[in-house]
Structures are given as C-alpha cells and as structure tokens.
Length: 196
Image: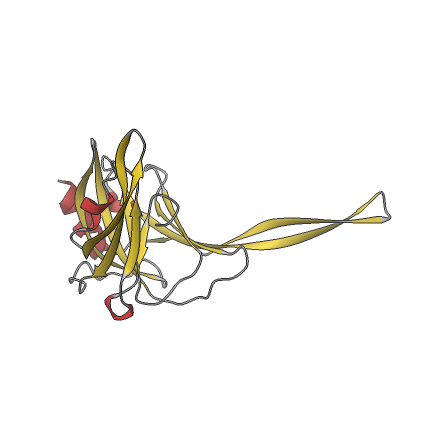
C-alpha cells in the first residue's frame, strides 16, 4: 500500500506481492479484478473482525486506454468501485521508468485538478512495469481536464551561521516538480464514459 490511499504491486513477470488489510477494509474488493488473492493468515483484532494477510498474484494486464499521461506513467484502464458508501473511480497505470530506493526520497504522482480533490501517490522506489492503482473519490467532476503531475521529494541540508560563528545544519526536503501534463484525449474519453 502507498500512503494509505494508493496501491502498487509488481507486474506479473516479477511475481507475487503481500497485502495486509485492516478490519472492515474494502481493498480486496477493489483489487479482485487485477489480481488473484489468496488468504494466508489472519490476526485477531479485539472488539472487531480480524486483520487479513493475502498473497496477490497479478493477472496479465488487460488492454485499456493505452494513452501516456506523462513520460513516467501509462494509463491502462479504469472502473467504478463502491468503497463502503462512497463511489470511487479506480484508475490503473503502468510505471514506465525505474529508480532505486534512496535515503528519505519519495517519487510522487498527483491525480486531479483544481476542480477535483487531488490524490497524491508516494512511492519509495519505482520499477518499470509495476502497476499503480489510484482511486479517485470525486466522481462528480468531469475528467476532461484531469491532470497527472510527477515530482520527486529529496532531502536537503541547509547550513546557517548562528550569530556569525556557530554553524547550524537543518535537515529538510526540497520538492522538484516536473511540468504538469494533461491526460491524452483517448484516456479522457475512456474515463468520461465510465462516469455516465
């Protein structure tokens, strides 16, 4: 799971992934069309249903919109999903580049625009061919101007001289943004059809 809102798992060529769900979670319903899930274990949860541990074997990807949103992501498909009482538009993307994990570095993708509640997915590493699931909760807005933005957050050390004599080091972050690109019309038409 990524940032408690997005899901990422390896492509079929890399093997299975493991998913731990909280009690009353709807995540398994969300991913059943993308993976073959096998329940491996449960852990008790006092006062409620147990936690569940699943092994996810990715299914071969279906052909979707096949439109590039950025040089880093490729749109695959989307479908409606009911997360409890809330209607969600689930979009699936393929990662097109690879980056290794690095100290306090995150690779981020933001889905949405000013009229929609934007969703940001943060990953600690990226592998080409892996899939990213982004559930968009605001399905009332037209996706005709949905944007996908990619940016990387990197650690930065700032140096100040305190009282002109004592060096003071501050460990912080610097955000580097790529240019915002609007999803290509083929993917937009596909998403718009799902919302009607």
